[in-house]
Structures are given as C-alpha cells and as structure tokens.
Image (cartoon, rainbow, N blue to C red; front, side, top):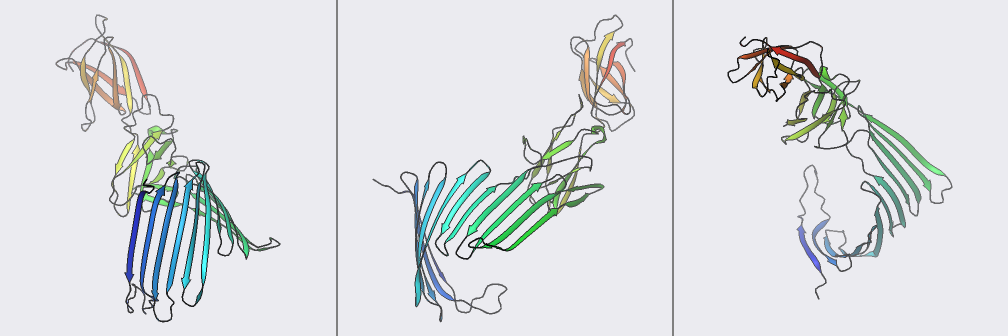
Length: 387
C-alpha cells in the first residue's frame, strides 16, 4: 500500500566564487564555497505530515565544513495543529549540536489564534495570543506573548485600533530575570498616525492610506446622511465614513490596477437617487481621486394627471425636459392606468413634461430650491395640448 500522499522532493546546489560580492558590498567575504541541500515532504495517513531534510556546506579557508540533518512531523488534531522537529548539526572541530522544537497552534476563532512552543536551544518556552486586525472602521488587533529562557523572562504586548481619522498603536515590553525577582527593563510606546490628502479642491484627513487614495464627499443635498466607504462590494463593515470633520479617506489600491470603491448612505432621503454606489478607479504611482456622492439631480417628482373630463390620463409615455438648462438630458416618464407618474433625477428648476404619441401634451412642473427627496405635486388637470 502506498502510504505517501502528494510527495515532494527539492534539491539544490549553490557554488560561490571566492571573489563574488553582492551589490553594495565593497569587499568579497564568502565563507562558503559550495552548498548542497535536499528536502523530502509528504502527507501520511491519519493526518500526519512528514518532512526530511539534509544539507552539506563546504567552508572556505578556516570556515569548517557543516552537515545538517533534520526531520519534522506534524498532525492536525482537529482543534489544533501540532508540529515537532529535530535538527542535528555537525561541524569539523566543533561540538555537534542537536536541537528539538515543538509547537502547538490553536485557532480560537476566524481571527484569533493561540500558540505555545518549546525550543531546546537555551530552553526557550513561548506562549502567544494574537487577534488579526482588518482594515475596517473601529476594528482592532491584539498581540501578547510571554517568552522564557535560561537567562530571562520577556513579556510583550501590542494593541492597534482603526479610528476614522487616525490609526493608533500601543506597545509595551518588559524584561525580568529568569526567577522573576526583579524587572530589568521595560518600555512603553505609542504611535498615532494620520494623513492629510488633497485632490483638486477637496481635502480630507484620515488613517494613513498611502499615496494612492480617494476622497469621498457627500453632496450638500445629503447633509445629515453619513456616507460609508469600503473596497469590498456587499461588505457590512465600513473602512471610512463622512462625519463632522468632512469627507472620508480610503486607499485606491495598487498602481495601474483597477480598483473600485463602494459607498452606502445612512438615512438616505426617501426617493433620493444616489446612483449605483460603485466608483471605478485606475490609479497611477501617486493618484488622488475626488468622489462626490449624490447631486442636485436627485429629486423625484410624482403626481396624478387627469383630463378636462376628470378621467385619468392613463398609460401615456413621454419625457421631462428642462426649460432653462440646455445640457439637461431628458428623463423618460410614463403614467400608469390611474394617471400616476414618477419623474426621477431632477434638480431644482422648471421643467416641461411632454406626453402622448406625438408628445403634444405639455405639463409644466417645478422643483423648488432647497427641496429634498420626493416632491408630490398632487393632482394636475390638463386642459390643453401644445406648449
């Protein structure tokens, strides 16, 4: 029975001349003449993993030759991953070394992990807890570790937080003697990072996002309706949002790579048309985009049309035309069986709604300055045809 599953073999040979020097190194100093490495890894039954490795290096001048042998065994326990390995090092004229390592890694949740390990070199014990931080508003990350060896005990802690206008990082390290009789040293540090960004006449302050960014601003008609921004469609968590301090600031992705930012508007006025909620970007090495969510042309006018005989003007199609804005693109409109109509995407101003097969029914409508959302003009009696 073949017990090896997905076996892999890696072999490498490296030769370095005596006068080779890497870029930036003025004087060649190659301690090794050649090196041979080999590794075999495979999956075994019962969720075991096996790795076997060996290497031999030929020292130059007084550098001793070195031979290494290693073996590792791992297994998934369901609730945790267990890994154990042993490595033997043999050098000419030097005492041979054996090093044993064992570690247990336990996922506590989708974003949390605990790990414990032992290294026989200097009898090193380590325990660590970490919580992964996402690039989301009000999210945080945590890392805490405790390390003990033959010489000392070291504790470290780290806390990172994403605010809307800044990023915060707190760190603390403490070192005590092995018996914990006294603290030898400790240090605390904190970092508060923010970024000022300009794109045209728009300005934003936010968490550091790099030299490619988008400034997302809410139109004046959305005053009081915070706009949230994310780079993932359908995401429930925002990466930034507009507030009292102004527009939101988000990263625009990698250089020369298409990127989209998605917006959602909290407490969107009834009938307000905020568009698709997706803005496509293609940043260069250093690019700033100014994005405006919403516009004046976000009003909805609705009402009922009846003729001089009192009957509804039903099932008529047509369009809405601006009287004072030659650049306005006409908006399609129609009436239902009861004569009710809805006209979307209108800005403050005066319009003519033209209906009928020959567009000879003209209904004047107006969107007042300072109005928002849906404007109900009630019932309009149409007495005449023509403008």
